[in-house]
Image 1 (spheres, one colour):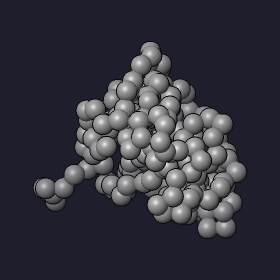
Image 2 (cartoon, rainbow, N blue to C red; image 1 turned 135 degrees about the vertical axis):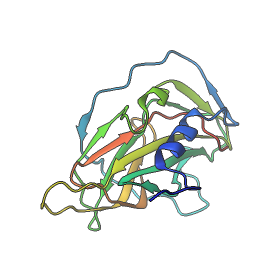
Image 3 (tube, rainbow, N blue to C red; image 1 turned 90 degrees about the horizontal axis):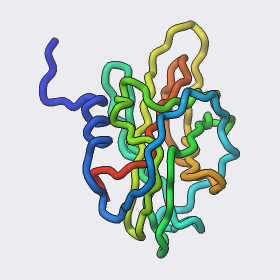
Length: 193
């Protein structure tokens, strides 16, 4: 079967990562090589501020719609400066997942997955997000099941915008499959402001 007119997750990921300047972001500093895969545990979650409120940090995380094709999934994580001062990020967001009971899922977080197109992951670099501006990260995973082992889906995504900051918990269906591997790109400028 030949499908036309549809966008694959790879095309969306490539477009988002290669996109130009987002209003409100400035960059500086040197690029670093992507980190190696690291098994992680989910940080202790906190609740996300109510819609329309701004956390004390001045930055709020939101998720776009999941783009799915051939067992691959990709979603854009956007971090917006809702405060009144510039907000600094550098590197990768901290990511975890919780099940329906808010128990942590065991995930392996990677950087530079070939499907996410590691050559386009801009790597860690200092970014300044002015009030009203935003930066983005792309999350990629597969829902491939390779064993009879029961797979517990995620019901919430836990996002720590930068080290030492309070985590934000977002409702999110994460159908991770048996690999438990989630690829995350560094914060970068994206096509949206």
